[in-house]
Each structure stands twice: as C-alpha cells, then as structure tokens.
Image 1 (cartoon, rainbow, N blue to C red):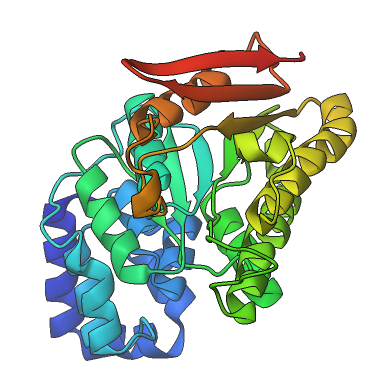
Image 2: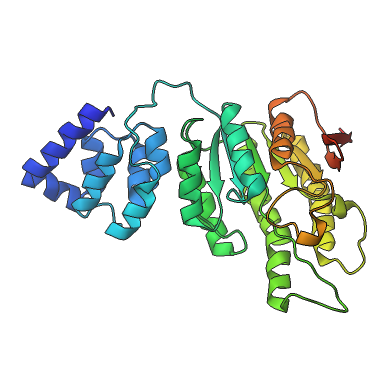
Length: 334
C-alpha cells in the first residue's frame, strides 16, 4: 500500500460513516476491503508495527485505525509502538524477500550486534526481549539496514513463550536461523553469596529454561528452511568454576545443544553452540575489565557466519579474547 493509497484510505474512512461502522463491526472485512493482506490484517489486530512497516503499510494507516477505535490499543500504547517508526514513508514491497531469523535477548550488547549483523547479511530479524521501549529503539536504529520485527516477551514465562511463538508464526512460517542469546551473569559464591536467592533463580530460568524454550519454539519453524539453531553458551560452560552457578547454567547449555542436535540433525536442522570468552558488555564486573575482552560485534559476525555458510557444520565454536587481537576461533565437531 503506497503513501498515496493510505492517504486516500484515511480520507474515505473519515468521510464515510458506513465504512467506519463496518470497520468497527467487522474489522477483518473492512481491512480486506481496504486492500490489506491476511498478514497485514493480523498485524493490525495485534498492533505489530514492525510487520506492517516491513510489508509497506504506512504508519498513518495505523494511526487512523487507532483514532477510530478499531485497533484495540490505547493512545499511549499505540504512540509508544509507532514512535520508533513514525517517520517511515517508503514502501518496501519492491525489495527482495529476506529470510527471517529469531534473536532472543536482542536489546543487550551482543543481541544488538546480532540484529545489525543479520540485517547487513540480508536477513529480516525477529527480535525479542523484555524491554519494549529498548526494542522499539533498536528497530529504529536498524531502519537504515533493513526491516526488523520487535516482539516483546519474557522467555522465563511459559505463557509468554507460547504467545511469542504465536506472534512469530503470524510473521513467518519459516526461520532460516534462531539464536538463543538471552542470558545473564551474576557474581556469586555459595559460601559468601552477594546476590539474593531470587536473582539466582532468575539466572537459572533465563539461561537454562529460556534457552530450552527458545529451541522448542524455533525448531518447528527451522525444519522447513533447513535452518540453523545457535545457542550462546560461554567458555565457562566447558569446565567447572569453583562456586560459580553461572558456569553451571552454561554447562547446561552445552549439554542442551548436544541433546537438541541429536534430534534436529536428522530432519535437516543444524545446531551449534557458540562459547565466547569474556565479552565487553554491561555484564562484566569492574574488577574484570582490565582483562582481554571480545568485542560483541566480532562475536555476532562469527555467529552470522555460521548461519550464512551453510556448507559447514560446527557443533561447537569457542571464541577466545587474546591481547592485541580481536578473536581466536576454534571450531569443534561437525
């Protein structure tokens, strides 16, 4: 739908009480009459601004739908969703179709770099995290690189994970890749703990359950595209660190990758676990900042390379920071 067509629609909606009444009583029928596809109609129903923009639907259309009370969003909620995209005026339908990829933990240091790297590589990232405002800002930042879809979700909450799956499937039936990136690290000790027990629970849920839930959600959509699932682990997930619960969660991610791979490879889905060393992100404690660290952009580049270079299968990729060099890569298995 071009900008001119949108403006024409807005004029019709304002001028025709019968059309407005139809929109209010039969949203699907009205949206179909206005020329929206089924995917676009679903996006209007759910307020998925990113999807509508990727399909070339101008924000003015959504604003008018909201003003007339048929999009089901409050003014504050709608304003928040369109803030990051309100200046978009171009129709992207003439662009070649981009394969879709899912990235969890998209608003963190590595997540943001993954989103940008996938855009640069010609993918349409579907981005999820808990912070809706940060997701909106990320989509706005990515705009010069290509379309992206933001879907807020809490992958530690089973209900939210199910809803995330439904919303991803409303965007696409196939994923070329999924990166289970969400996770947190805490400074801890069993003898001298510094974090409340509730934070330990949060870390275990996010790093272990959240990663497993992401794999369960993504695998059925990866099968048709013979795509790749990447689990983000850590070098401490390959060893035992005294008193370190974080390393226990990352050991679980390593085992999870092996279990999922055994089930997924026979149906054509590649499964890799990427084990970065210390990364320069907000999670690094001040006392460790003098150590060599990996740049998140370089880690993201290595992960996207795993997806793009489909002729290789690396079961495990270890990325280690080395003083004076960006990264040392070690591929294991495959």
